[in-house]
Length: 210
Length: 210
Image 1 (tube, one colour):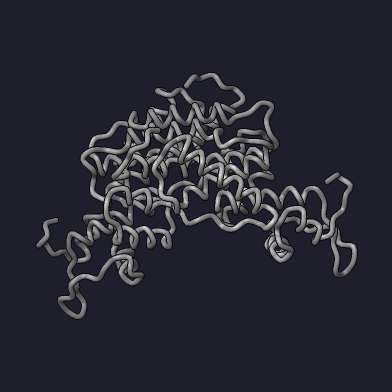
Image 2 (cartoon, rainbow over the protein chains, first blue to last red):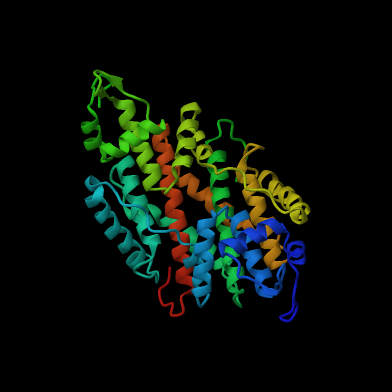
């Protein structure tokens, strides 16, 4: 769609595959900006609307994000500049608080997780990244189940994550919308393959070799 | 807690770090079985309740699962036998339907994704695994963004997933509750590290080396 082209809502629905009723719902919810009103019953839409609709569709269909989360991502996307934003947009909220009894364990785990990321891996990650808190939470949980566990238990995961990022990051950068969608797609694929690999490896009658 | 030990709700709260009010909420919601009623105002709880409470706590705090999802996992856990169940329990629902216009693309992607898993990787994965549908959805999405993409684009992710599973699967098997929690923790860690790796690699002033 060119910058000047103006579409009726039915044409917007046809191009994006999103039903008219759903588009009207997104408009009411403020996920999609209003079009240019041309009469009491008609408005016209443009390229912005088409791209935004595709983004919403991909986030809901691919990532299975709930609407409240899509709203956050879309708002953050509008505020964001630069490509590093894509993963940042997708970062979940900080994990919920823990019971008082576990606060000390969690503080230890956070210190160990941060040292692992900053010193052992040498990664440049914002101090306030929610991913840090999620990593610490995972470490504290493993310690509760398996006893003494070092943050280095995640070294394979870190190496895999870094390697995958090197495969996924593309030059020249995609558009920010596309970066978000690609990140969502690769995340979904990674989760799916992890579940399948685990099923394969714990299958009672394993015969195949990966 | 021994099989015979009987705890008051306040003691259950102390041991698990879950507030009494929250325990009462789980009881009302049916997430936690009722205790043995000893009077009009008192019931006693045992090892089952303590373990179940820890599981619910880990699923909500670590994985950030919503209560509806925790309910599914707990119900499935009660019905499940065998350790391969852990990842299966955690599999999300099948992805939502797609717009009619994309149905053909998705069918192609599903065939390609299945061939990749079954033939190229040689993994033993149930035909009805929802993970297959998620992988196909991710492939179809990448094709929409980047044009012609083969399922082999996920080969690094599959290799990483298989390698991680080999590190995570432990002999002898943990209890089913523990397997579920460990799987959740490693999944959370993987997601967190993937976001950090992406941020590191797209950081404007990258100096560290992974």
